[in-house]
Each structure stands twice: as structure tokens, then as C-alpha cells.
Length: 307
Image (tube, rainbow, N blue to C red; front, side):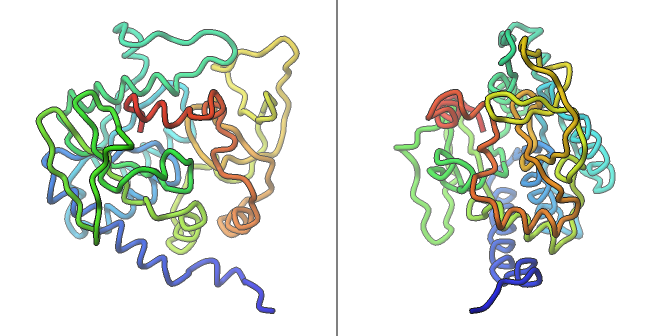
């Protein structure tokens, strides 16, 4: 019986095909749309997509800006990495803030210990797309993340209200993407649609991409809530019986601190993380508290305009 070794995991042959497909999609967006943006969260998927965009248009500049919707509850490590990466690669960064939406009365801050701004960013995102007259917003969603995302096309049409209709999508045959739209409509585009979490990590290892320190094992104050480890901060009100404690963890996914769960881990290198992902038996979003609000939480949010 053959045994899969780490060198085999690091660079499977099909990674070149996934890379080529993603680069083709990015170039299609640049060719078909006038005002595209690349949605950047600071997570590993958006980092990979940014790397692919740089490669797709080299030696010229990336022909569209990055757009970050900042909830105000992001991990500081994510923001620091974002700013360093943008400066290092010479990219244009646009930031829109959920706090501004709250101040303008566009959304209402949730209250209580389970409050989160993750859902509020939908309004901030739609307002930003309208303000910037964006006709295509590219994101790093993958089909293996969550079942609602597996229903998406690569070029996913949104109506004038930014809404998604999963039962009325355009066919995509032989990588022929239809970007025709009426005024006020736009597309969400997913160049990483055919990638998995393992593919992402294999690509990161193969290219030795830099990542926020959150992805690596470190000691951090955490609290355990509903069997989810949350990185403790002042944006998470404590329940009466909760007490933060120091624990060695890392994050498989990076998002709003109020709902992004961590895992116990000693993986302190890319190779360690890759082996850990291979052995994992639960999805990375299993630790996202916001996805637990209902069985169709993600699909409901996507219908409303969430990415």
C-alpha cells in the first residue's frame, strides 16, 4: 500500500490547472467589466486570489482595486497584514466601514452577548458597490465551504437590489461566461469556485505565501461558548459564567472576531497546517458562530446581498 508523503501533498499536478482557470477568470472579468473590484477580507482565500491577480496581469499593475468591508471588529493582525501587503505589492485599497453605516442609521447595532456585525456588513457592501458603480465584485468563496456557496455559478448574477436567485442562474458551458447585465445589476465572480480548502493550503505552501499570524499556532486569551472557542476581546460581552483563559490555538478562517471560532492546534508552520488540514474531518466554517443561527443562514444572507 502506498503512503501519501508531504512532498506529494505540497504540489499536486492539478494545482497548475486550478491556477490557470482562476487566472483566466480574472482576465475575463477585466475584459468584460468596466468597474470591477476584488473583495479582500485578509483571509487566506482572498490572499491567494490577490496573488493570482498580480500574476494574471504582470508585469503591469492589477487593473482593479481591493475593497475591504471593515466591521470594526476585525482582528488587528488581519488589518496589519492587509496594510503591509497592499504597500508591498503596490495595490489600490478601498475600505468601507460598518460603523459608518451604523452612524448614518442604515443599520442597527445588535445588542447582547451574541451580538455580531457580520450580518450588518451586507448593507455596507451593497452601499459601497452602488457608490463605486461596481459591475463585478470578485470574492474568494469556494464550493466546499458551505452548501449555499456550492450552488453559485462562477459569474453569479445579482439584481438591482443586490439579491441572488439560486433558481434562476445562467448556464456556464466550456468556461463561457455571460457578463451581460442591465443598468443597476452586477455580478459576483468566484475565481476559486473549483478549489477546496486543501487546494488553497497546497497552493500557499507551494508558493510560500505570507499569511496573518492568526493562522499559526499561538497562545491567546479565549472563551468557550456553545462549544466554540472565540478569541477574547472587548467586542465580545461575557456571559455571567464565562471567564477568559489562555490557550494555544489557531484560526482556520479569519473574519469578524465576534463569530470566528478557533481550534486547538500546535501547527506553527505551513507544512504543519497542511498536514492538519488533511486530517481534518469537519469543515473550516464549522467554527463560525454566525452560520449556526439557522440551517439556511448562509443562503438567507446571500439572498439579501451578502457575499
